[in-house]
Image (cartoon, rainbow, N blue to C red; front, side, top):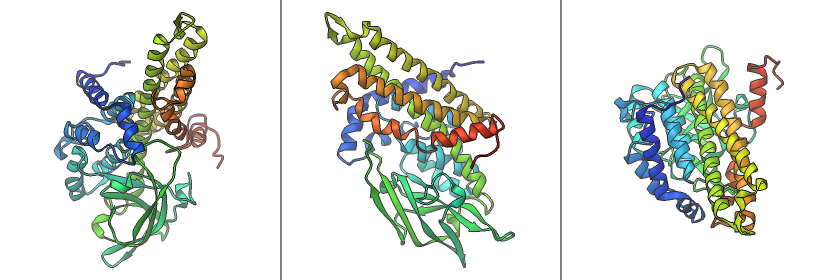
Length: 385
């Protein structure tokens, strides 16, 4: 097996890391606490082509794969600026549109997604459905040449500064009469679409929102792809979501361990650095091993996805998400512990990650649902839910 990046991917990693270091965690936190967005970093990443690395060249992208976008997500996170909307706009939305959108949709949206001048949020989660997307209550019905959407969504990231939101709804299948998934591109200023902010104990520039769709009227062109594209289109975006979320967690773990290692190598107590004590060094070494093991699964999942091995990629993506979430939580907690009281201050830049890494064990899919998936699809157990 070849674990080396291509020369182009190595150059991409170095370039993204350099960009991230120019902004850093202080920039990220200052934006979050001021209630602002990381607009400057996003715009520069788009201008340099990093947001569009996985978008086909004919639509203004770099023509790479999810592996390339994984590198971008990990390296920005490793410099203390985990951009959540990388998971949403380039990973989920651009992948869905590139694979299942109409030619008109690809031509209209992909070039602007690639250069970062267009943001599209993603709305699937609902208050009542939870992890069971088969119970989605948001429904779209035809009314002449238009679609009319009604429903509620929750935990929707970044919709306050997105241009569109891709809404997962259900429509009636003409042949069976059953409700089947369908995806719609809804302008965020559409009549009948309203939002309210969810107060979260997470330090992040990207806020979470409740969405309300009350008789939102859309043209026929708002439906993503053909009428039967809903479920395949939806699933085509979920593996990239899990892989890039896992990459962010791995990068965050690396960032926390780097901060901790620098501190323990220089902090003097009883005449020598505290990192010389095994009680400090061993927990950091253990966390570093867990992060590196998890990273391997991230890049395995990305490679399988780019090779078109979707079933294997699905297993690996879920495992990667599970492993990196646990590894990042361990790394951040260990980093705080070895900093002592300094670990809880904003200045030292590790406690500010606590909420995000804890949320990573819940969203976008909980560790319990991943264990269900592995039990059923890897170990051959009967479905338990």
